[in-house]
Length: 166
Image (tube, rainbow, N blue to C red; front, side, top):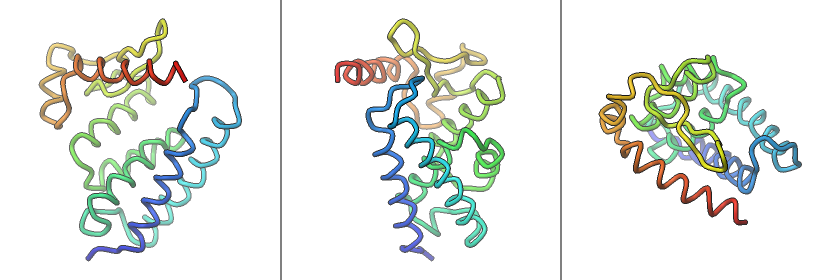
């Protein structure tokens, strides 16, 4: 049964997460970046409380919108890889979100990513981080409802260029 109150709490946390991340510049120590760090700490506690009180969320419990928001909160828990791994195993995230979280975890473990969802800045452009089996990358991406890496790289660099101009 849908828990609207829990869904609303998770969506609000996601909205704060996104607002805090808006206009942050990677690799710079700024008040905005410090705020992101604090938001992630608060969200880490929220995720753990949700799991303790309600179990691992499902779409049945918090709806599609709630699961998208919960995934994003988990995705940003780079300082708690074990939490990310447990949620990856136990939450019913959509396939594309599974791909993003899988890659995030692999990179944190100093491994190559599987789906090519994570990028890094190189010469003022975003380039894909190392990937295993590049030959079959787009096949894996399409199976997870992602566009091709070539399409995504164009989109992400267009958006990044706009952000640099601000």
